Length: 269
Ligand code: G3P
Ligand code: CA
Image 1 (cartoon, rainbow, N blue to C red):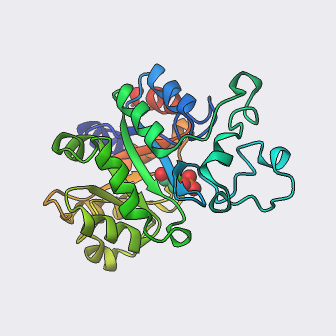
Image 2 (tube, helix red, strand yellow):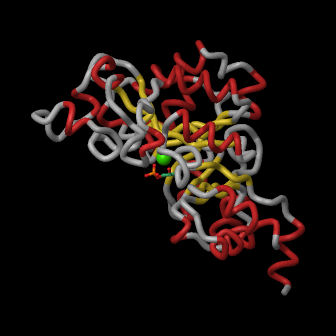
């Protein structure tokens, strides 16, 4: 079809392993990025939050309850928000057993530990600042860790790092603190408002369910803060047919828990 032909002329979308290869290893752990690396995937996504005593850690939910054994270890501290636990308390938790016994003893990584492993694996990172309204100042602190770990060097800035958030304010703050960083806004602003986002966001990353070819074209027609056409990474796509449809829309990236499924789907187009 003409649709497929148009798709085949474009670059294939980048595949980003969501919370690591999180269908196959516990999300947001070193095991999940190692798994992505072992499957041959460079780009991984994570979520950054903060402990009570100011350590940045990699965790998706505001609470530790779903992805660790915190309820067992600290039964009287409901609702087990990570912001109410110290780094030492978090370091004691098991963040792997909930996923499967072979991951027993896997820890919630600090951002520093996580960045070390991403570097070691020669991977690339879409870093999400999660729930920033709970953590005043987290943008500056995140950039400090990235800087200490060498992730704000020119090569990294150009090729290996995207910082994203659902919070427009957080994305703006990151752009203002360090204008060289590639930034993404998570969500789907109206087409009429996209030009406002073009001042501080290089990418618009919407839920795939709300996406259309026209919307992707509208984003592509704008130029972002680094004088490049704006791009679209869609999430979270685990089905082959959805990935093929979105590739037809021209999305630049697909964020997925099952990078292997998406790779084979896109090779077949
Ligand atoms: O990277 C996009 C995606 O991660 C946003 O949703 O809830 O998985 O952080 P969530
Ligand atoms: Ca995320």
